[in-house]
Image (cartoon, rainbow, N blue to C red):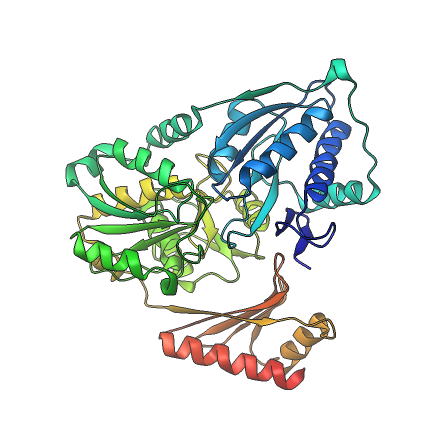
Length: 460
């Protein structure tokens, strides 16, 4: 069974049986539920939704099903076609639309796809609203439009231009400083839409681009999650091309990983750290990340006399805390940059522009910049779940086992030791327990993760 229904949308593998995988019937039912929920909650007759998709092989099929379903409800559709998650998020309020649907399974392999749901602000709908959509999907209480009231359909091909223009207009983005450096960058876009959008941005910033896996075919040449073990090709090409840096994005372009001039990972966690360092250096304000993100962001914020806050895992939770604390920067340790001056969504394009501005103004190489930050190393492991495991009871046992340490139960169990930490949580999108660790060396972080796995297995 590979169909995962959650408050943030529906995700699954293409093909198979209804309610087990992401089939055409499941797509139609869920699109119907979201469209109906919007109709029930808006005080206007004519609704408009913006849709966009990454380059997955199933994308055109899923898009056609979603579009036709929304039109069948009497909802007007603006189709951005091949797009990015942040671009759709920007275009929803830009077009005064009532919501949006992003068709992407983010970092999941090519057999996966998903529907991610946006409100009229271009932000992911709340947990409460997501639960209402799921209930509607379950009840199938839909009322489709008669022939004279079917929704209209239009396409837009200027969304990337609008998104990039808004980035270049940001006061904290200095295109001229970047252009003066004449940077050369290698880009790995895993054969998805980042291969279209990121070069357009870099061209405006005067950066020479060497493209690697930038054809939007949806045939991912490696595991699309931008982790070190998947990025050997670009690390080698950065050195071969004598490039100043490497840029890696996931299929929907909301996660940004960087590589230094020596072909070494900058560290996915440190994308947010570097951008926050630049912004907090110039303006006071809070920084926010989730409980599974590096201590380095906290350290950098405090060094600038700013506050740091940690939310539960999940973009919606990060955004809610950012709004509560009026944060000027936030995001997730997976390379997700959320810059409220543009919009409340993870955005690799604005991340690239802010990072390059920081790099240019710091007058350092990427490796020299990385050396200015606290040296922490993350470990990320997981345990496959089986039906007989009571995860909540298991996490409670782990909490009691380490009751003398600093514990947070805001989201799963986070155990803060003096020199390292571990965060145990049940994934919202996959049937696994994720184990995040951080320590002063990679060996220590991995050892801590293995130690936690052994403890969990002993409790099982």
